[in-house]
Image 1 (cartoon, helix red, strand yellow):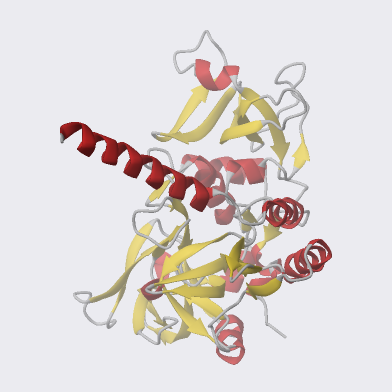
Image 2: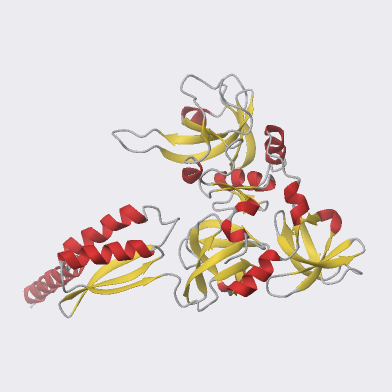
Length: 400
């Protein structure tokens, strides 16, 4: 009996394994390969656009299913798929999807966490500040897939932003605003007593200016809440932006102002930053927007030659750390900071701090010095690919 039971167990096991292997085997391997090839052509980086397409076998026919935010990617894929197999059925959805006419949004909390998937347990990709505009791509229960002004695609919660149609969005975009310029602070329910808060605020938060009352600006939020912000903690947005001058001194001044701020993966505010969130926040303080991640920032700016040493570096240059590519592979960038002169750099590693490339110094950083492989200059490159003056970004302007 025991041998019979063991035999039945073995047969069942192999039956289950066989079924599982059959399940994992693509029904149409040529189409699966084509899907991957089109992805590599149009959406090699999921941070830039959406391409989540698969082929399923339904009643013996290949059905292309999923989502993409690149219409031409779908068009090319479907055309090539029909050439391979005339029975292909197209069920690909081009984003935005199920958004109605509310395809825009504005962040409604001081700092909104934006995650790579629609889950609190998912990796945090970035953060967006109050007043930041977004494109709205797709809902999934309590989560929405969005695209930031600099083109970063990820997910945030429904309570983090306000969806708007084009008319509502343009009304918000074209209105006079104030920008919060202190590190931290609050918006209050009234200007007489500061005992009730509407919300907290951090540097870079934008609010609609509704008027002035003594030492306060009267402001409103994207969701219509009204409050009061102290004038000495804020400025009219256009006035502040016009006062920004991108110089070596100004970059370093803002970088030093963040010393000691703790490191948090995905952090992009004065509450906490990661390495590229630090460089991005410093540049925002100077009226300039960088791409989100170090591996994206390295593709921008004016390259600085470091092949013979550090003599070509200038204060404010971006320094990139990682592994040199070999056998035709690209460099693998894992870290970024600012050069400050005298072989020193400031970066977010544990917290924002200063380290040296000089092995004779007490703050020598051996690991990063060994992996310092690229550098680029932002000064002189604003307006080139991936580096924007805030008011020149399409999503910060009127939508036609």
